[in-house]
Image 1 (tube, helix red, strand yellow):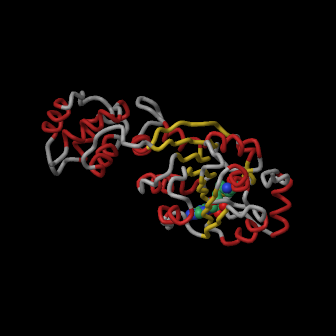
Image 2 (cartoon, rainbow, N blue to C red):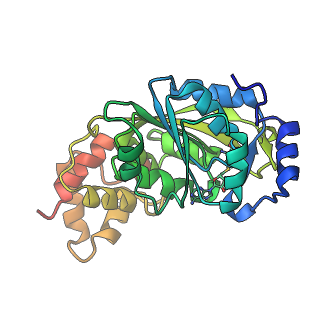
Image 3 (cartoon, rainbow, N blue to C red):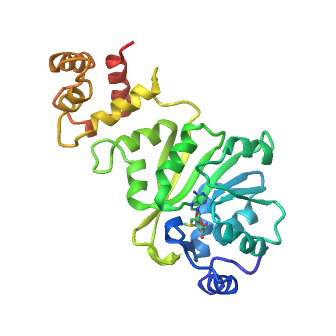
Length: 290
Ligand code: SAM
């Protein structure tokens, strides 16, 4: 057991000073300085000695160290080369941690998983994400259908709320559908700004995404489905019929749109935000050109 936790204000300051490290705002560098929060994250992620963990953005190793204490193997992607010697130092006692100096948006994560984890090992993604690219990172991981059990991430509170939202709420939108098509999403906890160094301007939350074995709805053409969902939410104040008329204006007129909506059993004056994922799937089948 490591007695010198990285994630305390004192130790973090010591490490930063020792290496003359200065934060790069453009890389979303807000390091965690609270061990209890980290332990909570690990617990929500369900990490144990059998599990493999993938981390995105280890920073100076605050979360990486806790993952190393609890997981069978840890692989972490870090874009900032300046952090490599620091991580080598803070994680020196763990030989089951691999740091990969790479932009996560450019990495072939599936390939890396094949190289570093055993075939039957359950793998979980756990990270305090760089907030400027939260959505592209998560959507890339989901759309690649990575063979992971779950994704547990610290992200901006509003984004977490949008990803986990259900119909008829302020946060519900095409991002909720996109994320919940692949996962069961829930907010595990809200996190105050004070547990970061430096403190971010926004509030944070830990989002837990449990991968689904199969999508919750049957969709023939996923691209068409997601385009239609986006169009339905296009202008929030407008009715479904108005938003879809605009989207399909080259293919059909308003009357046809009304007919298709009625055939789908959906009142044309409803708004996108009132539709469940199941209703969007029915719409996609009804509007499909095939
Ligand atoms: N895990 C550390 C912690 O909790 O203290 C640091 C988290 S900090 C919010 C985000 C980290 O992601 C930084 O270390 C940053 O350099 C790294 N990062 C930013 N963009 C990245 C990218 N495209 N690929 C990989 N890492 C990235």
